[in-house]
Amino acid sequence: MKCVSLERYFELYYDEEHKTFLFPVEKARVIENEIELCGYFCIITSEKMTAKEASDLYKSRDASEKLFRGDKSYLGNRSLRVYSDESASAKIFIEFIALIIRNKIFTNLKEEMKSLDKRPNFMTVPTAIKELEKIEMVRQLDNVYRLDHAVTAAQKIILKAFGIDVSYVKYKANEISDTLKK
Image (cartoon, rainbow, N blue to C red; front, side, top):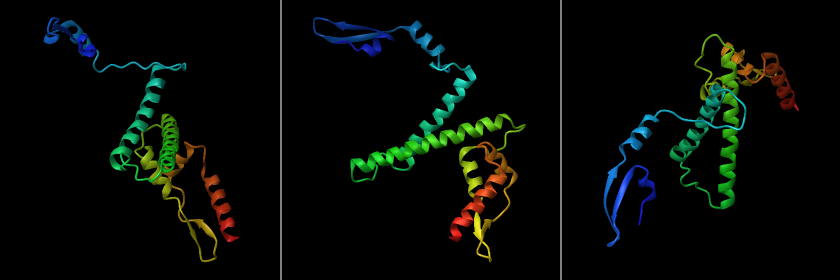
């Protein structure tokens, strides 16, 4: 009986008569070749792109994989805490959609950062979301909803990554206010 996975790195000797494993001999050159490859990786893609584009795409997907790992670790996804297969499927589907949205946010922010002179610390996904959450509407004394504060410079840069400017934010705020009046 031979162990296929070890044969690449060791010459394995067996006692054929008694069908027992005797000892291994290390294939030093094979192991050295493997060690020389440590720290290098290869990305193969069917899309035509530069090495940098492939690396950036890989890194953005790596972030998504880390989110799934974080979900398992921190949110208790090892036990989904649902009572039916349908609920489990729905939860996983929603997580998948959330990761697609997160990846789109990541990609847009990264593209916008290329046009900036410096690398602001608010252009990460979690920080950008927190920054945009500060855009709030409040009901004023005249029962009209308005933006609570002016849109900040950081928020303008983040919104620009999604093709949104301040005038559009104000337009949507007015639209929401009109809907709430009804």
